[in-house]
Amino acid sequence: MKNKKGDLRDNIGDIIIGILCLLLIIGAIMIIYKVFANQEDENAKRVVNNIETKINNLNDGESNTFLIQGFKGAEGWFLAGWGKEEKEEKPDPCTFQSCICICKGSLAGFSPSKSSLAKQCGVKGFCRRFNIDKIVVERDVANFIELSQYVAPGEVGPSSPDIKKEVGNKICTGFQLKSNMIEVKIIKNKNEIKVLQPVDEEKGYSGNCF
Image (tube, rainbow, N blue to C red; front, side, top):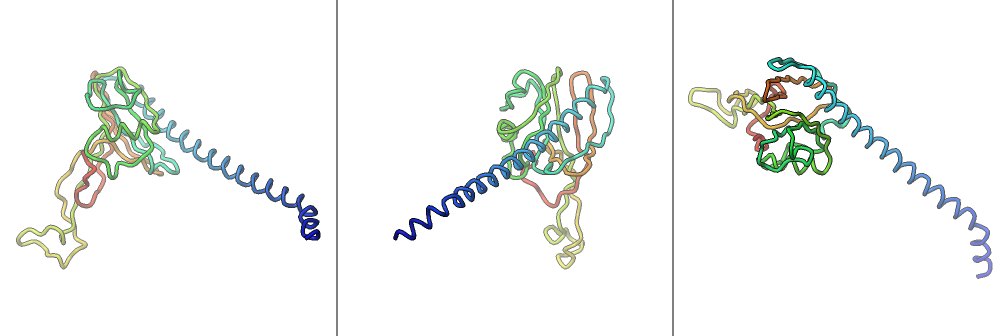
């Protein structure tokens, strides 16, 4: 028994050093994670600041198409907008002014309401306000379905599942960002700003489009 106690006393220094090393490793991991998380936030701010600058550089009645640089992790962020006269729930910065927000989250799985977007922006989002009545942020989606899911009389049957049928475009509120370049069209009028993502292919009907 005495030998065991003696061994413990002899090793107490090594045990303390091991615990301290473990704490240092955990602390380093937390710092690295925080740095990367902050970098993603800063990149998101850079995107919305870039869009704000391009809007402000346009005169009333002008429009242009721009390429916006994405960033690593951008697929976890979306862009949305609210007009000051909209009655649905809005992010706090948009209560009294129209605004455009870049927010952490995904458009997939949302119920068809802008209130659902506002709640996500309330958790983490960066908004830029504009002195204008209406702001629209939308994506234009080319809606396709597999012919194996829809076959009209006289058309190719389910034996050709790789052939798709376009069933028209749909306009969806907001758009998801990408890690690569994003094409954005901005239209600025006296009482309205539109930020549009051009046609993007989408298979079948997406319930999150509203």
